[in-house]
Image (cartoon, rainbow over all chains, first blue to last red; front, side, top):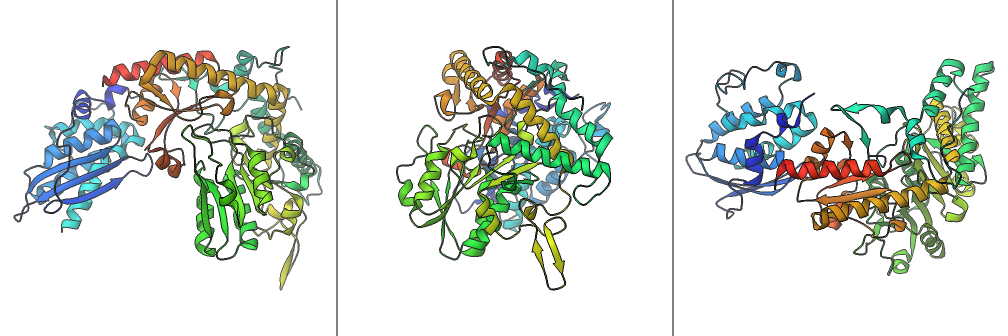
Length: 159
Length: 422
C-alpha cells in the first residue's frame, strides 16, 4: 500500500509552504482564467502574460486548495515561465500523460522515468517528477491536474 | 430465523459501546496496518452482523419476487417485505403502512415529493422556502422544478453559530406553498426545531417537507409529534443496507398525488387508453422493490430498537461534547469547530478547520492512521459559500464510537500538523 512519502515528496511540501509566482497581474495585458475542482471546491486563478512572439513572459497564481493542487500550480508556474506556447503545450501533454499512467506501470518503479523523460516525448519534467506518486492516490489526481487544465484553457482562450 | 440482536444497553439505559463494536465486523479490519477508526457515519453507517445475516438469510432461503407470487417463498418474501414496512412504521410512529413508501434512498424520496406533489400543486410565481443548511438533494430537485414551473425559491438564513435564523420566517413563508428543510445539518450538525418550523409552515398555508436523513438514525423519531407533511430518510445511514430509502407522507396528501415513476406494481389496471394506480403505498413503488434491502432495514431497526433511540441520542450528545472538549483543550485556537456550541443542539457531526491545513490533506494523513473522516463540501455547496469555506474536514459519530476514537482522531491530527509543519 502506498505511503504518505509517495504522495508528499519534500519538494511538494516546499512548494506548498513557499508557493512560487503567487499573486496577480494586471489584466490586460495578462489573461485571467479561473479553474474549479467541483469535487473538493479547490479553485485556482491563473494570470498569464504571453508576448507577441508567443513566449510566456509572466505567470501568477491565485486561489486556494490542498497541498497537491497548490504545489502543482506552483511548480507549473516555475516550469512554464520563459517557454514558448508550443513548449508549454508539450509540457502540459507530458505532465498529463504522467498523471494518467496506469497503476501497474508503477510497480517496481526503478527510477523516476529515464532521465526524467516521459513516454518518449523527450520533455524533461524536472521537479514536476515529484508529483508522479499522485497517481497511486487516484482521488488526488484531479488536485494535481487542476492548474494544468486551467492553463490549457488560458492558452486556448488566448488562441 | 437465527438472528438475535445483541443486547448492548446496560442497566442504566446507556449504550455498551464495547458490545456494540463487537457486533460490527467492519470495525475489526485494519487499514495501513492500524485498527480502523471509523468516523464517517454521516456519510454511511457500518452494518451489524444481524443485518448482514438477515440479507444472507433472505437470499439463501426466500429470495423471490414479491406480490402476485402464489408459491411459498414468494409469499414469504412478500410477508417479510411488508413486515419490514411495518417495522419502519412503528419506528417512526406513523399511523399506517400506507404512509410508508420504500424508495432507493432519501434523495429519491425527496425527488418523489418534489416532482409528485410539486408538479400537481405548483404554478408559475409560486414560492417555496428552503434553508441555507440544505444538502444538494433538497436544493437541486427544487431548482429543476423552479426552472420548469417558474417558481420563486426563498431561503432561511443562518445565525452566526449555525442555527436557522427564524427572525423573518413568517415573512418568508408569507404566500409560500411549501417549506422544505433539514431536521439536522450534515455539515454543522445543527438539529433544527422541526415542530416549530412545521407549525409555522402550516399556519402560513404551506406544506412542510423534512429531510430527516441525519435525524432518523440518531434521534427518537415520531412523525406525528414532528407535525410535518413529508419526511425523507435513508436506510444505509441507520445500520441498514444501501439502496433502501423511505418517504413518509400524510395519507391524504399521498393519496391526492399523481404517481412518480410508472411501471409494474404501481398499477391496479392498465388499458390501452390509460391506467388506474395501485393503492398506497405501492402506487409509488414502480418495479421490483429493493426487497432484500428493505428486509435488511427491518433488521437494522430491530438492532437500533434494542439499543433504544433515547440511549442512542444521549450517547451522541455525550460523545460529541467530549470530542469538542478534548479537541479544544488539546489544540486551542489551532482548531475551529463549525456549528452550534452546545452539544445538545447538534447531532454526532463535527466539521472543523485545523491548523490551516486543507481538509484533503488532513483526511489523507488521517487515513494513514486508520482514521476515516470525510473532506470536502459534503454536498452542501450553498452552505459552504454562506460560511465562506471551500471545504471542511468532518468527523461523525455513531453508536459504535467511543472516547478511544476521539483520542485516535486527536493523535492523528497532531501527526498531520507535524507532517506538514506549517
